[in-house]
Amino acid sequence: MRLSIIIPVYNVVKFLPRCLDSILEQDIASDDYEILIIDDGSTDNSFDIANAYSKKYANLKVHSKKNGGVGTARNLGVSYSKGNYIYFIDPDDYLAKDVLKTLLEKIESNDLDIMTFISKRTTDQTLQHSETKKPELGLSSILNGESYIAENNYKNEVWWYIIKREFLLDSKIKFIEGRWMEDAILTARLFLKANRMAHFSIDAHRHLIIEGSAMRNKEPSHYIKVIDDNKNAALVFETLIQSLIKKNANSSCIKRLKTRQQSFIFFLMVRMLKSTINLKQVKTTIYEISKTNAYPLNIFPGNDYQGIRYTLLTRLFNHKRAYYFIFRFFNPILKNKKGVYLLIIIR
Image 1 (cartoon, rainbow, N blue to C red):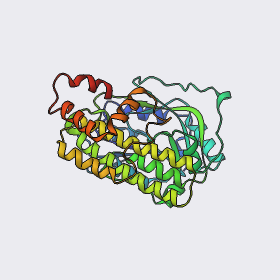
Image 2 (cartoon, one colour; image 1 turned 180 degrees about the vertical axis):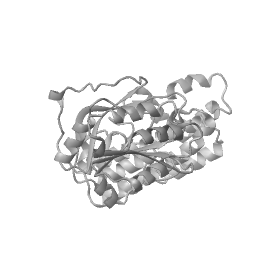
Image 3 (cartoon, rainbow, N blue to C red; image 1 turned 45 degrees about the horizontal axis):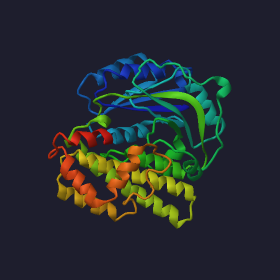
Image 4 (cartoon, rainbow, N blue to C red; image 1 turned 135 degrees about the vertical axis):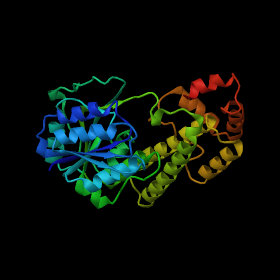
């Protein structure tokens, strides 16, 4: 079998059929790939929809587990996989028409550990056709992971690349379970292990932007876990960065990873302003992140994060007293109507 497509599912009854149809209608024989749906304890009809599809399509299999998060679901999917290559897609996303055959042929013929491709963010569920014309298709230079990171402002998420299964298993890298930012950590770790990876310039994937989704939840109480998980991601990246420094790795790769690490701290500090934590907890968090090289923010925003708001807020965040003042004044528990102006900047 050539490909295993792993889909973690939790309460996505509205979007799951669109995702599955976009895969099942691809230009590839059904016995060349399998779809592994891992239902993470859905409380809506997602499991029933998945089962209905499995009765119709022999290459679609459904597994159910207690709710444990997307990381546990994906890891379980890998354990069930049989394909030579693995692709993770979220159940509210979808593929453009007739791209899977080309993607597989390209990664197979070049014997790549990882191949990335173009993903588009959209609120439109009907962007079915790839915008890439065949004469425009091209594969970038084949690089090791360090060089790829050095030369590309890569995405954290896992749905914009395909992985050789043997490489993934040999790396012993798994998703961190029970935490946000599991994609960012796995992507960096995997890329750094890769000997052969490249970018294929085909418009293949649609990442659907959904208001009210977990990733876009702006409730102050929700930010507490996100803050802790951003801090954890920054600490994991510190370990990666220090190991690269010790072996005199590509300096541009190290710089990009430092920028990414500091982005976790930047967005952590944004979320603290809008969370329900108190000032004592804020000071403790800043003390903890100060023990790494991720704070103060001396590399972020850099070239990877464009926009005046990043520059202005970074300057404020690097001054602890200024940040504490902003927190006292604009935190959701304490803020008055004047807080709206800063919140507009940091949204």
